[in-house]
Image (tube, rainbow, N blue to C red; front, side, top):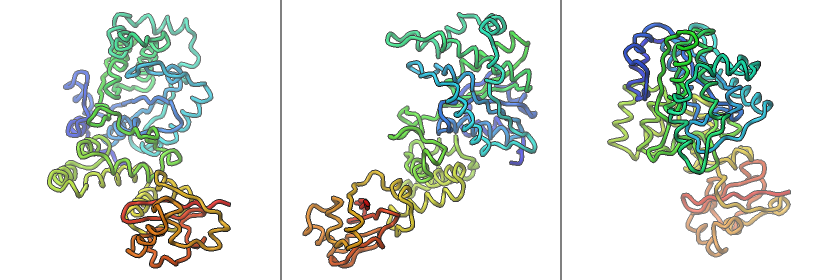
Length: 429
């Protein structure tokens, strides 16, 4: 990752990634030289997810512009949970679970930031400097520098206190102090002068600026980016099965690719600006294509390809594209059961004993077995019209015999009637 000219504010501006900042003109001047910039990540799971992508990409953009990024994984603050944007208190995680989560996230971050050479990134864990604190130490050195009326005025606190059905525990109330101290600590020990985060973190970030001024006389800066939301206000990266994870064991490259491929026309341009590194000229071309030829879905295809290759590498992208081609008629073969079921997880299915399949299954019986046809006569008509497929190969005769040689994976074959009606026949025994 070769550092680029120091024009990070211009880069963020055209991408629409500046939501709030302290002292904009001074900040732009401050960033005309290489600076240390940090963003924090909450270790609620052993994998990063789509919600982490925006701050992660922000750090990457700063590094590419010649600045030094710090990725802070909150081993200490994660024990409490940030109340910002939350309607109720989080379940507290055990130290062992948090340690596992921190380790998993650190390993992933090293794929997306450069940790050697110019502007080497740094990974830190705030448990390293908070783990040994006593309560008295905390109150004396940190708490005395926080006016309670200022804390009560923060949106993250006010929104919870104003609710009749949910209060705010003292534990959560203290979160702001801990995150603020992170900035103060990094400013002294790492010469960090800029904190970045989502717009919902503005109160916590500015609290850190105020604390650093009171404790150390430091002049620090803040910059937030918009939250990654769909046009109807939902968090981007939320699926019916939960979060969109960056770990391929939690979200396969195929499912990851499909998510971005199916982003709406209304949201795709923002995703391209916020999450990818496409340049202004390519972005303009994709924007024009979306306006003039929306059916081509060039913007979605570019987004899905860029994101999947970035997160899962070229092999992950090629695997995801092959899986997508199966849905459009490419012959299905040599898959694992896991790969096959990932692609066809939401289609009807039927079962057959391995001994029965080895003896031979009439092709006319297969569509009935999986519910694609209501009767044998309906299946026969579909076959005669050339509309029945096994693993996307057309079955030419109703008298054709299917055996274990027709499996697309260790124990499953894919049946199709017509263009889009799929089902899976699973082998047992």
